Length: 118
Image (cartoon, rainbow, N blue to C red; front, side):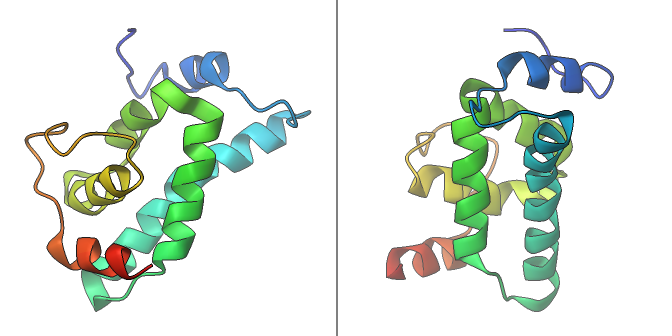
């Protein structure tokens, strides 16, 4: 796999992008913006302890469906380390990764418990 960097990630993301309903660059950008939305939702959680998990799940599912094999790498590149525990927990919950993937990152137990209630 090609190594993603801040300089090349847009081109690589366009190559991997798989959304048959996408007709414009704006739609691609809208799907890429989902990463920023996840970042904002996790930032809010880190400050307030509150998170809209259904919205996070929705963004993750759309990203997975649109970028499949590249989604994890995009998330690692575009999100800060402080976001990774929440993101890993959601990815494990959705069965997109195994618990031992991203082994340098601890899962967030509060998020895990909230996800089990859904």
